[in-house]
Figure 1 (cartoon, rainbow, N blue to C red):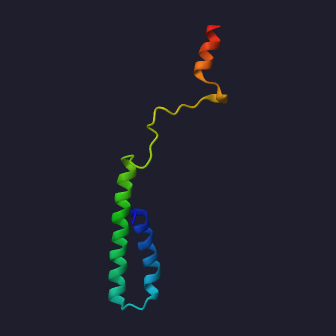
Figure 2 (cartoon, rainbow, N blue to C red):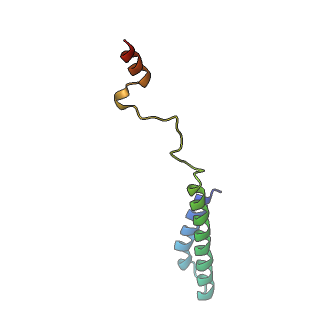
Figure 3 (cartoon, helix red, strand yellow):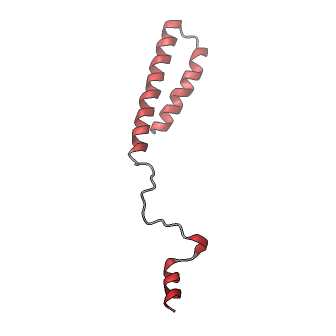
Length: 80
């Protein structure tokens, strides 16, 4: 189970929990523990994204070329 799906599952659990008929003490305890779980996994996901493990703009191979003109084609045109 991925970390994203764990956060979504805990959020759905918190939404459904008040309607399950738990006593007040247990309902409060389960909501607090589930909320702490969401906070914990959110911090883990945030640290993964800040490290750039999922995606980043650091790939130097991608270059924007305006109007589809290649730089090599421009160089050969200048030489002529």
